[in-house]
Image (cartoon, rainbow, N blue to C red):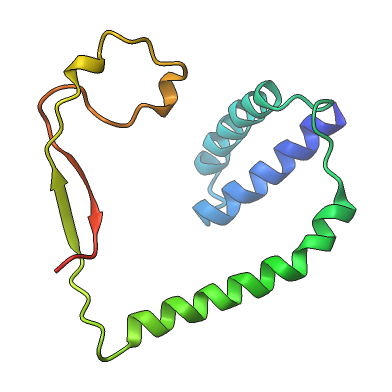
Length: 127
């Protein structure tokens, strides 16, 4: 029960940060969303299966922060480089995956492509 309350508290705090409102209607919706999210989190990751090792998390924190700063600087250099000509846009790739429609998917939530003649589109940086 303690783990469920801890998860609910974290999820509710996240809700408050994201919604940035303490109106009663927003709090009611947030409470319902937190209840559902807590139930799902307990179902997907039961409390006894994978305990969190705080010492391991703390030991990895400096490397995580350093890598975050390094990658942020690298992205900033690329974005502000005067010689680099970026042309953000969309790349459209026509697919025909009808031959795969008879196979059952092992995990339906991982299917992202459409099986009809619609093209799959994604972000690209080509020019």
